[in-house]
Structures are given as C-alpha cells and as structure tokens.
Length: 326
Image 1 (tube, rainbow, N blue to C red):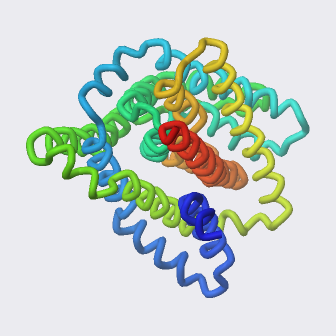
Image 2 (tube, rainbow, N blue to C red):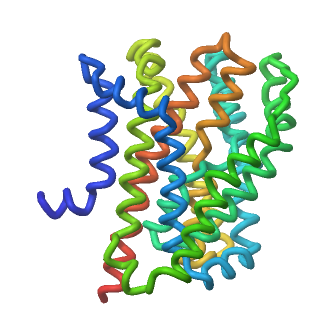
Image 3 (cartoon, helix red, strand yellow):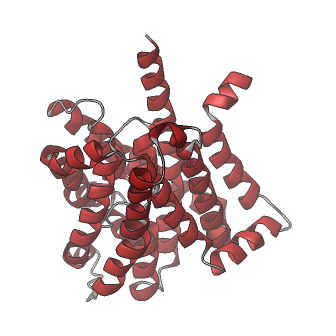
C-alpha cells in the first residue's frame, strides 16, 4: 500500500484536492483558494513552474525540440484539426446547446500553458519541444479560434463575431512563459552545476505547483460545478472525458502510425490533448455569458484532463524507470 501511494502520490493528491474542495461543507478550503486566486497566486505558480522547467531543460533538448518538425506538426494537427472535428462528431448526439457551445470553445483552444509541459517531462519527454508547441499553438490560436469556432457555432445557429485580444495573449506568453523560462535556462548555465540541481527535485516541485493550480481552479469553480446539480455534472464529466479520450487516442494513433519514438512522442500526446482554461473562460464569459453550462464544460474538461493525464504521465514514468532499471 505504501509503495502504491509513493508511486501514485501525484494522482492521489489531485483526487484528494478535488474531493476536499468540492465536498467541504464549510467552504473554508474554497475561500482560501479564492483568496489565493485574487492575489494572483496562479500566475505566481505558473511563473515558478517555468523557472523550474528552465532549470531542467538542457541545451541539446532545446535544439532537438525546435528541429523536431514532425512532432510539432503532429501536435498541431491534434490541437487545431482533430479536436474541433471530435467535438463536432460528439455534438451530433442530442446535446444541450450550452453544453455543445462549451465543448466547441474547449475544442478550439490552444494547448495549456503549464501542466502539459510538466507532464511531458514526468513521462520522459522533451520539455523544450512541449514548450515550443505551447508557444506556437497559442500564437496560431489567435488567428484560428475566431474562424474555427464560428464554423462550429454555425451548426447551432449561434454565429458570433469574435475579437481576440492578440496583444494580451502575447504579453501573457512573454511574461508567464518566456521570461521565467529564460531565467531558469540562464541560471542553469551560469549559477548551478548539473549535480547541484538534482538534489532540489525540481520535477516534484513542479508537480506540487500543478496541484496548487488545480486547488485554486477548483475553489473558483466550486459554485459553478455544484450549481447545476449532480445529474448535469455527471453528464458533462462523461462528455468531456469522452472528448479527452478521443484526443488521447488520436495522439497515440498518430505516434504509432508515424513511428515517433519515446522521448519525442510524449509532447505530442500531452500537448495535443490538453487545452488552456484561462482563454476558454474569457471567451465564454465575454461572448456566451447566457449559457452557464458552457462554463461548466470548460472547467470540467480542465479538471478531467489534469486527472487523466496526471495518471497517464505517472504510468509512463514508471515504465521508463523500469526500463532504465533493466
């Protein structure tokens, strides 16, 4: 039992955070999370995640990641092409308009800023390439989101003129991703020796940061998650789980078909299937505020993909350790 807990501590911590916040009758934990959110704790954690990531990334990983055109294209295909198609197929079934709109918003999103990179590293993949996909997909998303989302919404007669704040997105990428990453990379090269960094367990620190981000996200979303009742939540969780499993399945099929080896395939799997929450919430609140269930879909998918991918990255890490052992 102790060995299982040690191996699965990350997943168990995510589940514990979910249960503790959602089922806390006093709302003390949710209140703490909201206070942390209001004091920009999420941004601070993401900033730290990328400093630690910079300390973990080696220069040859950066070079290999930028040169790996095949993996970059495959990841972008999942993010930009297969995700919207998957959402469109799922919405052929009888689904409430608000739920469908929420799924469409999630589907057109670029990859998440932090968790996918951390999980790629945990699974033994190239974090530099995961970072490259993050930056590229978020930049491309500025132009693709209005077009693809408008096409999907036309099936529900919900055409909306979307205007994406390009400057805000680019500024966020620079401040929360590139700047702290460069601090970490420079510090690795100029301040620390390789042997010194190993004792800090930076990968574990990043995992704790992800748990903190999940805790804060859950705290802010608790009322939304519970507001629609248990049946609605169950139905939406099943839907977003199916959507995420489809994206993971597509990623694994592409990896297998194009024979992408270990060390390169992890960034395709995690970056292709994960979606950013912040931008999806902004679009829902700005353009589809009358559809409250759309926000529930955005939040539910974020939590579900963290849970599922947290388990997957841990399993892939265990297999990597077992392989290296022998």
